[in-house]
Length: 217
Length: 217
DNA sequence: TAGATTGTTAATCGATTAACAATC
DNA sequence: TAGATTGTTAATCGATTAACAATC
Image (tube, rainbow over all chains, first blue to last red; front, side, top):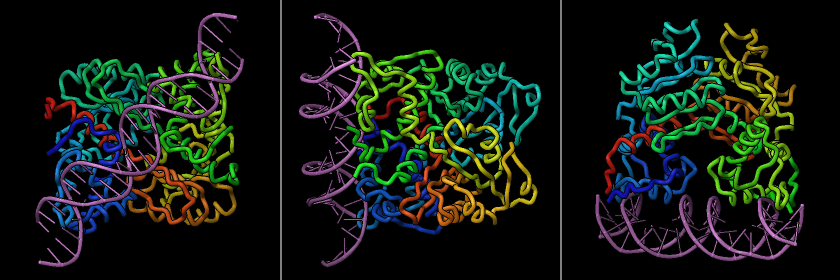
C-alpha cells in the first residue's frame, strides 16, 4: 500500500521526533502504544500520527495499537539509520571539537571518518580518536573513501567555498553549522542547516510577545 | 493597519532568515530591493514576502521596493533585538564552552550574564570573561538579575530538572540544546530546542531517498 | 463476542500563491 | 507621465483533522 511518493517536509521533520519518543518509551519499558497515547505524549493528534505513518506503510494492529520496539525500528529504517552513512567534519574550532567529542554519531547511524582543518596546531593530531588532516587532502580522502556527508563548522568566510569543494568531491549532503545559507549548484545535494542564530532570534520574538501588554486589544 | 494578531510559526521562522539576508545585502552595499529580487535570492515568492511583512506593517514604497537598511532594522525590532534580552547558560561542558567562546550573543541582541555548573574544576573560574557559578546559586542569581532566557547545555539526565528550576525561577524562555523534549508546566514559558540529532536524521532520510533507484515507479 | 484501534478516505483549516487597484 | 512595485484581498493548494469501515 506504501505510497512513498512525495513525503512533505513537515512529515520528515516529525520522523526523528517519533524515533526519539519511541526510544524513550522503549527504555521506560512500554511495549505497546496507541496513536492517541503517542500523540498526547508528543502534543500531536492521533490522526496526524496515523496519517504520517500512512505515508510509509502499515505498522500497527487494529484494536491493539503499535508495538513500541517494532515501530521504532521501522522508523529507524525509514530514516536510514542502518545504511552505514559516513561523514567528515570540516573545521575543528571550539564547536567542531565539541561535536566530535560529544555527539553520538553512531546512535544516529553515522560514522565519523575524519576531520579537516588548516591550522598546523591540529593537523596531524587526533581528537577523540578522529584523525585531523589538512584541508588540502579533502578531495583525496573523499576519492578514497565513501563519504556521504560533509559537516561544516568552519568560519563563515570559508563556508561557501568549503561547501563547493564538498559538492564537487561528490558528497550527498552537507550538514551546515555556519551562520551562512550555503547555496548549492548540484540539484541532488541536500543542505541541512543548524542555524543557532535563527533559533535564538525566533525565541527572542516569542518572549518579546510576552513582554508587551497585548498591544492589539 | 498592523494586524499583529496570531502570526504563524512559519512566518516567525522566516523572520530571522530575512534579517540575515538583509544584513548580507547591506554589507554588499545594496541599498534597495524589491520583494521579487529578495524572494529570488532566498528561494521564496515575492507574494510570500509581501504577505509575511503585511503581518507587521508597511515597510516598502510602491514602485520602488524596500530600503535594505530600513527593512533590516524594522525586522530587527520585530524580533526584539534591541530589547536588551539577557541569558544564562547551564552546563559548561564541551558544547557549552564552545558556545560561550564562539557565539555572538550581542549580534542577536542578547547579553550572556553568567554560566552555571557543578564541577569544582570550573566553578569560580571564568570562560571568555563569563563567570561560572555553582548551580546551587542559580535561583539567587536570577532573583537578583533580570534573566530572560536560560540556555541548557547540561547532560540529558539533568535537562528536565534544570529546565524546571529555570521556569520556577522565572525565566521567560528556555533555549534547549539537550536531546530531550523539555516539558513545561508554565503556559507562558517558551521552549526553543536545537536538536542536532533531529537535524542529522532528517538529512539522513533525505540522502537515503537519493540512494534508492526510485522504488515507486 | 464486544471493545478498541487501525488504515484510509473525506472535510476542514491554514498557508501560499495569484491578482490587481493604489500609488510612488 | 509611464513603469514599477507595493499593500491587500481573493483563489488555490497542501496539511491537518475528522470520520468510519475494517479488523484484531
